[in-house]
Amino acid sequence: MHIPSTYIGRFAPSPTGPVHFGTLLAAVGSYLQAKANSGDWLLRMEDVDTTRRVEGADTDILKTLEAFGFEWQGDVLYQSQRTELYQQALDSLLSQKLVFPCTCSRKQLAGLAVYPGTCRQRSMPEQNEHALRLCTEAVTIRFNDIIMGEQQQALASECGDFIIKRRDGLFAYQLAVVVDDALQGVTEIVRGADLLDSTARQIYLQQKLGYPTPQYAHLPLAVDAHGNKISKSEGASRVDIKDREKLLIRALDFLGQQPPSELAGSSLEDIWLWSLTHWDIGRVPQKSKMIV
Ligand code: GLU
Ligand code: ZN
Image (cartoon, rainbow, N blue to C red; front, side, top):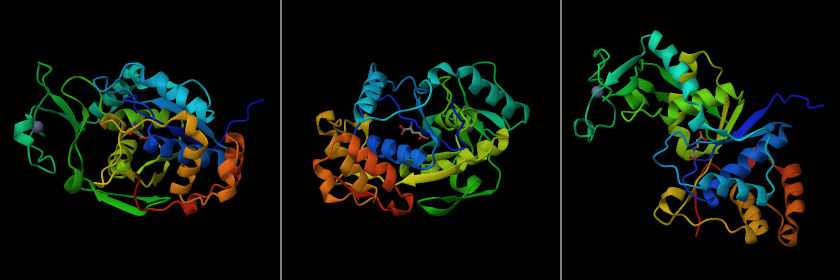
C-alpha cells in the first residue's frame, strides 16, 4: 500500500543539455530534503520553451539521474504536453481582467529594468503578434526562504507587469511552473538561487489563480571564475558518471553537509545511506561558491 506523503518535492530540469555540477546540486538538495521529510520526489522536464530544447537531452538527463541512483515517484511530466492546462490558467487570469496584450518591440523596451506599463489599456488585437502580460499591483510579496531567509519584492516597482505568454505563442516559464507545481501538489520547492528573484512573481500568480503557496528553499549556486552560474546551455561540462561517488561527495560538501573523509572510498549506496541519515538543510550555506 502506498501511503500518500504530505511532503511533495520536485526536481525540474530544462532539457537544454546534459547534467552538469549545478544541475546535480539542485537534484541532490531537492532529493535529500524530500527523503528527509519522508516525501515524494517528482521529476518534471521543463521543456515549455521548445526553442531551447535539445534533442535527446531529456533521456540523457534521466539516464544520468538513474546512474546516480536517484529514485523518483510516478511518471516524468513534460511541460510541452500540458499546453491545455496552461491555457486554462490563462483563461482564469483573462476573466479576472488581469492580462493585457503587449506589442512593444524589443527596441522600445531596451534598457528598461521594469516594464513601464505602456500597453496596459490596449484591448486584444486581431492578429497574434503580441505577448500577454500580467498586470502587477503595488503589493509587496514576502516569503521566508528556508535557506536564504526573509525575502521581499515590491512587485510593481521592482518587477513590473511580466510576460505570461510570449509573442511566439509559447507560455512563459513563470506561468507553467506555477500551474505544474500546484497541480502536482508540490509542497516545497528546493532549487537554485538563480530563481530566487522569480519567486515573488510565482507567488503572485499563485494568489491570482487560487493556488496554495509552497515553501521555498533556494540553494547557493556553483559559479565560475567570473561569478557566473555554471549553466548547461552555455556548455558547462557534463558530470562523468564514472566519478559519481566523488561527485556526490563534492555536492554534499558544497551543500554544507560536511561528509566525513572516510566516506571517500565508499560505495554509491553507502554514500546515499550516509546522506539520507545526515541531511540537514540548516547547514546549507547561503553564499554561492566558485568551482573549478
Ligand atoms: N527548469 C528550471 C531550470 O532548469 C528550474 C525551474 C524551477 O526549479 O522552478 O533552471
Ligand atoms: Zn507593451
